Image 1 (cartoon, rainbow, N blue to C red):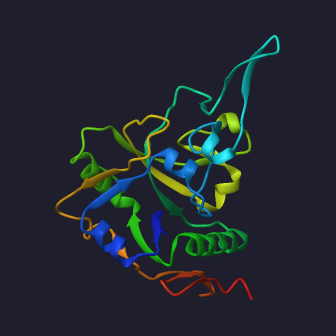
Image 2 (tube, one colour; image 1 turned 90 degrees about the horizontal axis):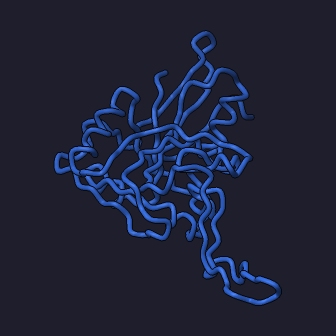
Length: 229
């Protein structure tokens, strides 16, 4: 199968709004402050963040035992890459063995639990068409990249996250640049909509070409494989 990306939703109204042309991106700070499972990442796009409102008392600056200042907020980056507005999908490509199919199904079911059972799908052949429509309604730089995962916090930036999030298999659209404390999303409207290049909850089936065994099935009702008994 060709690569596809999948975005999960809980709210049918948001799905329809998206299909009708509403493209939105949240800021890294939104995810740093969010508490919901799967959404929250206090170190989104940075190697370390501290927020007194979130973390309580933090570091203080002292010289020769004299208290000079209390650090209430800090964001540390490991390279020149700074914050950008983020729009994320789950990447599904062909697993190479039974173990990988089982892992994919388990990851998708975790995504369905955390983000919702409704979903949209874009085929690889339409990635650029989708991006070009986004670019047509903003003067901000926009691109897409696959996210990598690392246990080394100094690798973390807008295209690399902690391995704790590897199950999300992220494929990100990145828009513009924003400040570390920015929380307002970018909302871009493409008047023609996306219904011709984005499929709404299409059933996805992958069978073994030789045996016909069901390797993966995704619908709005469930995600399963015959490899798990």
